[in-house]
Amino acid sequence: MGAAGVAGGVELAVARDRLGLSQSDLTRVLGVGARSVRRWEMGEDLVPAGVWETLDALRAEHDETVRELSAAVRVVDGAAVLEVPLHGGDPAVFRPRAWFVGAVRRLLDGSGPEDVDPAVLDGVALRWGLPEGTSAAALPG
Image (cartoon, rainbow, N blue to C red):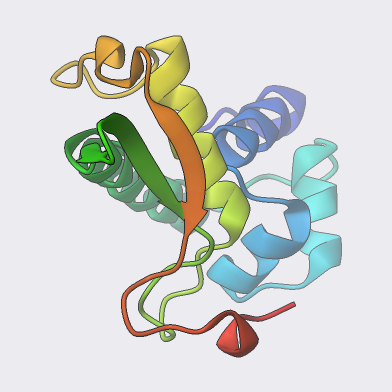
């Protein structure tokens, strides 16, 4: 998947951004140091094959998040609404708010999975929602 050197670094930065992850988020997901991610993205070090495999898995998971959001549109008081999670529901799996913002962006711009119609959000009000059983006080940050 990834190319060596600068091209691999640019591809990594684009993939990370598309998933809605900061460099700090990616270090947390990969379990590596911030310096490693910075050096990979700058093309100073080769991106290890295992990182590309993890990114492929994250892309598939992000596609599933896009599908779940597209299916979660509901009618509230006569208006179509999509509650966008503030944070992933499973505390063992870190997914920042930006992960969900990225998924909504992909819904809006049509860059989501081919089986998702971006028109699903036409005229839909977006609002933040908490995963069921979660209070705002329990969220990180």
